[in-house]
Length: 144
Ligand SMILES: [Cu+2]
Image 1 (cartoon, rainbow, N blue to C red):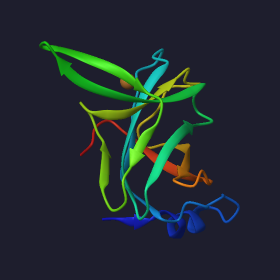
Image 2: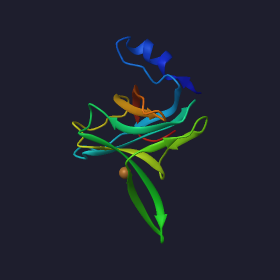
Image 3: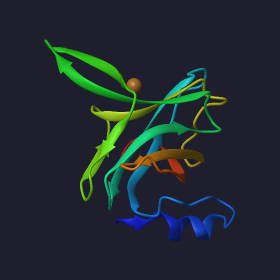
Image 4: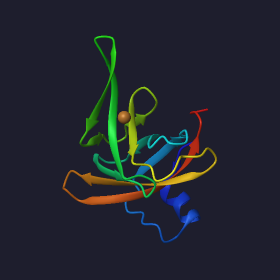
């Protein structure tokens, strides 16, 4: 089910900023971590109505958030940092296990299934105009 972020955000908290209303988010979740593990991963699907670039992600639950890409290279799984992530208009960009993902470094506490974390995504359009969006991600053990 695709839900418009702004609509769901307004239900959560009216004070949250919501300037990138043209981006639809689906299947957003963060993976539960084991105690002592200070690195986590989050996944979601993004579909922008206009050409946008994801320039930055951050979360109060982590010291830093990076966009990573996993791929097979010569039979070895490789993880690469992406400085930015292009969101072509009308195209669903999937961040999912085994592919693109958000890596959460320096977790302040373990991510517990059933709880939520906040994530802020920063975007830039072709003209350089910036916008951002806050998402509430459920923490789960797996994608379902
Ligand atoms: Cu990673």
